Length: 245
Image (cartoon, rainbow, N blue to C red; front, side):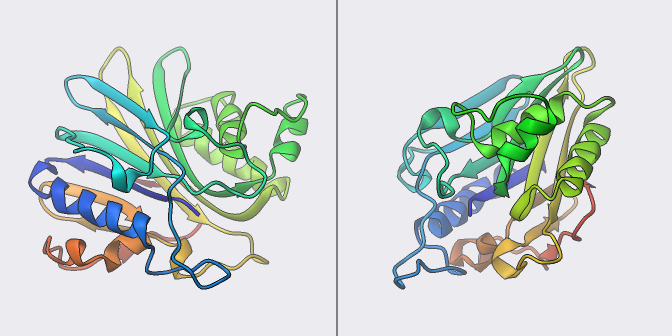
């Protein structure tokens, strides 16, 4: 189970406590424990993308809570800390977000959960890849869908549901950037199959004020640093609905 965060707007006044909250719960997640009762960490690398006047795309193999100062500029920003799923490859090449493009747009995808990449690869007529994680294979599926970002994501989600290819939950953040117009947008989705557990640790939250909106993994709202930011309330993102930030 990974942790991730997506922000849009003039978030620079609150980015420091938001990142402190993010790092804190990645070091010791308050909503989960390992089977032996030890602390639960999201320590298998991190990555981010920040689009403002420039595009800054970073991937690292180190735990995010050991990272040096992260200083995104206002615009749109997405960050992900990985906890590798059992049987999936690890290393900097497999950290999120993943980047791809079509004729008009650049895309970056973050994922928390588990897809059955063998089913997805078979659907696309390809052998199960050894050099891609399940999240990357889903991103391959997303990229070949027609339409804009929301239509692509909607169709890719429909396919994984039809194939019963969601092993646990499907939490997704997506940024799109139009190379001609410079338009940038962010999308979020959360759900799980009816026969899979979907508890507090699986949820995505949303907060907003006049200047910013933020989507994030539920654990972040439990950090002492988040409490100091002063958002009036954190609302859960509805299940099964693609939401635009």
